Image (cartoon, rainbow, N blue to C red; front, side, top):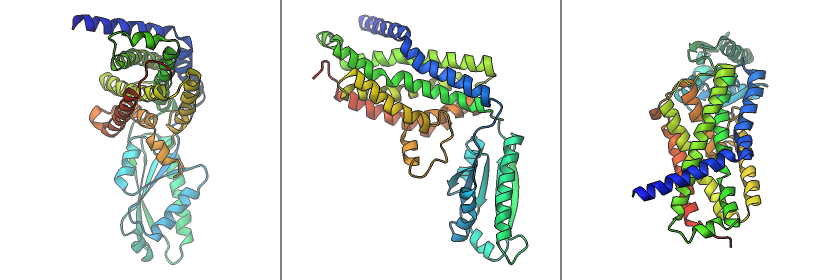
Length: 365
C-alpha cells in the first residue's frame, strides 16, 4: 500500500512539474485570464454588471403579454423572462438582473377593469444601476399606460428596492476569468494524452502494472494542483490591483474548483480518447473552448440570450462553473446553495469519465 502511494505521489509530482514548465499552457490559460481582467477591469472597473430587466408573467394572459412585449422591444435593454416572481427575485438578489417587473395572476382581468397593479423591484444597493433600471421600467410602463384609453392610470406601479452587495464590473468579471482559466488549463489534457500516445509513452507504460484509471487519476491530481495555483495567482492580482474581495469561504471555493476541474478534465479525456492526432485535439479543444468562453458567461451576461441559444448555454459546463463562482466569490454562497450547478458538473464528470475510461487506448490505431 505504501509503495503504491509513493508511486502515485511520484507520478503526480512529475506531471505537476511538466505542467509548470509548459509555458504555452501558462500563457494560454493564466495569461489570457489575467490580461483580460486587467484590460476590462481598467476600462470598466467602476461600472455595474450588465443591465438586465426580468419580467415575471404570472398571469399568462394576452393582456399581460402585451404589457411585457415593450420591454423586449426596448433598445439597449436585455430582458429575462420568468414564469413566477420568486425566480426573478432570486435572480435580482443574485445580481443577474437589475430590476424585476411582476405581472401578478389576474393582471389581465384587472386591466380590463382599469385597475391593474404591477410590482417593480430594483437593485437598491447600487444607486446608479438601480436608478437606471427604475427609469427604464417607469418609461416603458408609462408608455403602456398612455396607450390605454378609458382610465387615467390603468396600471398602478408599486416600487420596492432590494438591497444586495454593490457589484462592480471587475467583481463580476473576476469569477468569469477564473472559470475560463480552469477551462483552458484542463481541456488541453486530451492533447497531452494523445501526444504521449503518439510518442510511444503510453505504449511503454502499458507493459507496466499501471492501469488506465491510475494514469487518469494522477493527471487529475496534477492538473487540480495546477488549477488551484492559477486561481490563487489570479485572485491575488485582482485583490492587489482592483481590491476584489472573495466573500465566500475558501473551503467552499476550493470544493467548487475541485468539481469544476474534474468536470472539464473528464471532458478533455473524452477528446483524448476519440481524436487520433494531437494537432487535431488542439483544434477540437479550441473549437469547443472559444464558443464556451463567450456563451458560458465569462465576459458577458448570457441570461438574456436568444431563446434558440439558451439550451446550448445551459448545457455548457462553463456556464454553471461561472455562475457558481460568482455566487461564492461575490455573494458568499455556501455549498448548500450550489446544489444545482454542482450536480450538473458532477453529471458531466461521471458521464465523461465513463466514456473516456471505456474508450482508452495505450497505442495509436
